Amino acid sequence: MAGKSHKKEQTGALSIKNVTKIYDPSGVNVKAVDDCSMEIAAGEVCMIVGPSGCGKTTLLNAIAGFHSITEGSIHLDGDLLCGPGKPKAEQSAERMVVFQHGALFPWKTLQENVAYGPTVQSAMSAGEAMEKAGQMLAEAGLGQFIKKYPGEVSSGMARRAEIVRALINDPKVLLLDEPYRAMDALTKQIMHESLLETYDRTGVTIFFITHDLEEAIFLGDKVHVVTTRPCQLKKTVEVRIPRPRSFETQSSEEFRTLLEEVNEAVHEEAVKAFQAGEREMA
Image 1 (cartoon, one colour):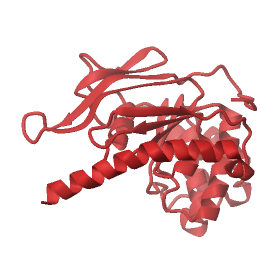
Image 2: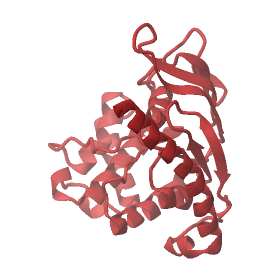
Image 3: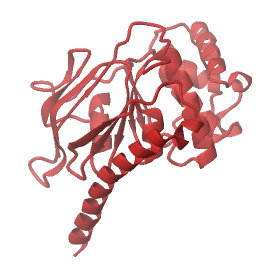
C-alpha cells in the first residue's frame, strides 16, 4: 500500500468472526449471513462484492449497529462491537455510513450539512464545526460551493459532501454501501479519484460494498467475494497495485488479470442466485 501519508496512527481494524444473521428466527427463518468471517486491517480499503440480495448490506448494518447478529462476533481494534451477550453494536461516530441514496438535508448548505453532526453531538461548538466543515470541503475540492444547497450542485459534488460529512467525525471506519451506483461512468471515475485522495489524506479504514468489479479492484487493497444468500466469504483477492492510482491503472495487465479472477468468482455466485430465483418462482 505504497503512497500513503496518513495523519495519525492507524486504527480501524475489523474482525468479523463466524457471524450469522437470521431474520425472524421463530418464524420465517431467513438466513441472510451464515458463519461469515473476515479480517480487515487498520487503514485497509476492503471491497465487498457479490450478487444482489446476498447479505452484504446486512453485514455492513451489523458493523454500523443498525442490525443485530444471531451468532458470532464483530470486534473493532480488539473491542467487542457485538457478539455473545451483546447481539447489537451501539451506534457510534467511530463507524460512519454513506448509503446509496443521498441523505443531505436539502434545506441546509453543504457547509451546514457537514457541520451538523459534531454540532448536535456537542463535539464542537457551532463556530468550530462550521470552520472545520469549510476547511474539509475545500480539501475535497468543494471550497467554491460551501454556501450552495444540495439541489444546486451536481450529484457527484453532493456525494463528495456526504463523505466529508462522515469524515468530520474522525471515524475509525467509513462504511460505504454502493455510494456511486447511480452515477455515469465519467462521474464515477472522478469520484473514485476523489475518494482515493481523501483516503491518502486520512488513512481511514474503508468497508465498501459494490457490484462494480472494476471499481472494487481500482479502489481496494483486498476484494472479498461473498456467496449468494446466505452470505459467506468465498474468496479474497489481494490487490497489490501500488498507490497512488490513476485511471491509467485500469488498462494495465495486472488490473485486467485481477478483474478476470474476481469476475470468475462472482459469476459463479450470480448464476447460483439466478437459478435459486427461478426455483423460487416455480
